[in-house]
Picture 1 (cartoon, rainbow over the protein chains, first blue to last red):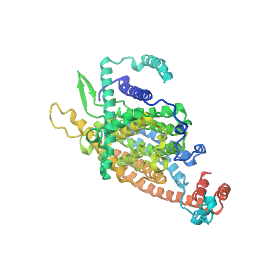
Picture 2: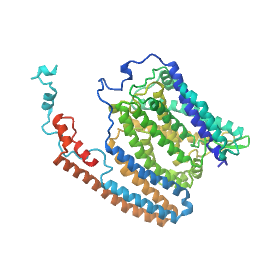
Picture 3: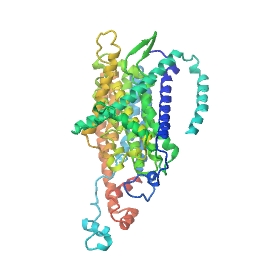
Picture 4: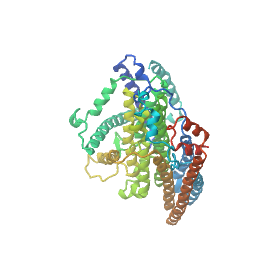
Length: 156
Length: 433
C-alpha cells in the first residue's frame, strides 16, 4: 500500500464528487439552453396517465408492510454496523471475538425467529380462502356495466 | 439556475476556509499530488462515460441477438454511436416539470442518483501500482482505509435518489415504483452488507486495495474459492436486486408501472437517471470482481513495457464477464413477483449469509470451532423452518377469521361497489393490527 495522509486519501473522492455535480449541472444548463423554451400545455405537465384524465390525488396511504420492512431493516442494519469492526479485528480477538459474535448473532436470530413466526415478513395475501366474490360471473359483470344486449340504452 | 450559481461562490469559500483550518490538512498537499489526482479523476470519469455508452450499446445489441433481431445498426459502425446519438437528442428535448411536482426535490433527485454511482468507482482498483517521477501511485482513483464502507454508503444514498424522484413527481406510477424500489433496496442491502463482512473478515481490512492484495497469490486465494462459493452467489443475487436489474426489476415493470420512478422525467434529467443506472451496473460488476475475483489479479507474462497493463486487461475482462451475465439474465429470466422477491431477500439470503459468516469465522479460528458452528447452523435452520411454518399457519388462521367475520369496512365497500374489493384485502387488513 502507498503511504498517504488523510487528505491525500480522500482528495480524489472529493474531486470526483465535485466533477459529478458540475457535470450534471452543466448538462442541465446546456439542455435548458438547447431545448425548446415554449410554455408547455396543460396536458403535458399533468401527471402521467394512460389515456384517461386522472380524477384523484396520488395515494398518500400505503400498506403498512412497507413501513414494517423499513423498521425490521433497521434491526439488521444495526447488526451489520457492529459486525464490521468485529470483522476487521477478528484475527487479533480469535476465540473471544468468535464467542462474543456468536452470542450477538444468536440474540438477533431469536428476534428474527419471532418476526418470522409472527408472520411479519409474509408479503401479500396468503392463500385465497374466499373464492373471489360470491355470485359474480361474466353475466353479472355485463349486467353491472350495462353492456348487455337487453339494455341497449345504458350501453350508449 | 442563477440562484444556484450565486450560492456557489460563498459555499466554495466556506469549504476552502474549513479545509485550511483542518488539522488533517496541516501538512498540505503538494501540487504534484493535486495534478495526479486531477488526471486520475478526469480519466476515470471519461472512461466511465465511454464505458456506459458502450454498455448500453452492448446490452441492446446482445439482447437483439438473443431475440433474433438486428438491433441498433445505423449510427456509426455496427450502431456503436447509437447511444451518443440518443444522448445528444435528449439535450434538445423539452424539459418538463410536472405541475404537481415538488420543484426543488424533483431537480435534486438526478444528482443523488448520478453522484453515488460515480463515487463507487473511485475505490475500485483497476490495476497494480505504477511509479511516476519517483512517486508510487495505484491505478485506482482513491484508496481510503474505509474503501468498502464507501461503496455501501453510496449504494444507500442511491436509494434516496430513487425514493425522492418518485415522491416528488406528484404522480402515482413514479410513487408506486419508488416505494417498491426503496423496500426492495433496503431488503437486499442487509444481505449485501453481511456478505461483504465475510470478505472483510478473511482480509482483516476494509481497504479495497488490501482486499485485492490478499487475493493476489493465485486463483485458489480468490475470495470466491476461499470463502466457499456461497457468499459470492448471495452477493451476486443481492447486488442484482440492488441494481433493480432483471429478474428483480419490479420497480420499472413496464406493463404495470409505465417507467417506474422516472416516469415523469424527460429530457436530460431522464438521461442522467439512465446514465446512473448503467454506471451502477458497471461499477457494481467492478466491485464484485474486486471482492471475489481478485480484482486485477491474473498471470502476467514478462514483457517489460506491457507488464503494467496486463492487470488492467484482466480486470476489464472479468468485469466484461459480469456485464455479459447481466444482459443474459435479462434475456433469459422472467420477472419475480413482489412477495417472491421479499421472501427471497428476508427468508433466505439474510439467514444464509449470517450463518455462512459465522461458519467462516469459526473455520478461521480452528476446524473444531467451524464444525461446531456448522452443526449449530443445521440445528438452527431446522428451528427456522419450523418458524416459517408457524408464520404461514398464522397468516392462514387470520385469513380464515377474516373470512368468517369480515371486517365492517370491507363489508360496506363490497356492498357499495361490488368488484372493487379483492379477495385478499380482508386477511391483509387483519395482519396490520
